[in-house]
Length: 188
Ligand SMILES: O=c1[nH]c(=O)c2ncn([C@@H]3O[C@H](COP(=O)(O)OP(=O)(O)OP(=O)(O)O)[C@@H](O)[C@H]3O)c2[nH]1
Ligand SMILES: [Mg+2]
Image 1 (tube, protein in one colour):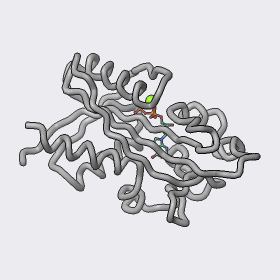
Image 2: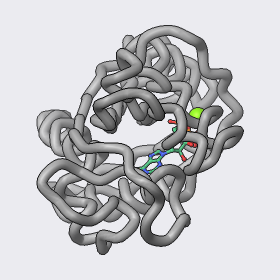
Image 3: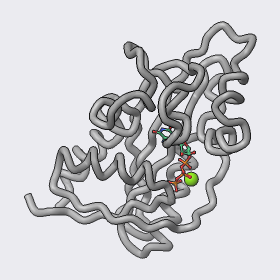
């Protein structure tokens, strides 16, 4: 198989690192990145993901992928969801825990939505990956967003306490990329 090249439009260096790492384990592909300023709409995770990718392909003038991550609390019917970036920025780890004071369940899921557009005007295709877990007081390095307060189901470590090898085979991002990989392999 010849090496494919694809642009990941993102401003998030941690997403880029994980994506490159995960994709490098599967198919021969080279990922470059562009940090374009794309407004993110309100709506469902799917609507937000499609609109971002559509705009990214228009601005870029060629095929690209984009990614949206949501952190969804079961007690809050899926919120903060795609708005987690703003919640994280304003409330921090402690505030994200405090949102659940008074609720019995601390269960949450991390949802990753990759979108692929074949180019300007081409409708984006979505690839979703979900990992169940729970919200816990922060443990581990605070290097990446809310990694320190998300403990995946079946593990006694938070994402932040895991090595990259551990996180990147069970994460929401890994699961979405697994589907994207299979799709990319079908492209000429
Ligand atoms: O602890 C974490 N582990 C993860 O695996 C993870 N993936 C994303 N995030 C954070 O969740 C928000 C999503 O917002 P988001 O999808 O709009 O991303 P972004 O604006 O940073 O980048 P992009 O939109 O340019 O790609 C941002 O605050 C990200 O830092 C994560 N935090
Ligand atoms: Mg963003």
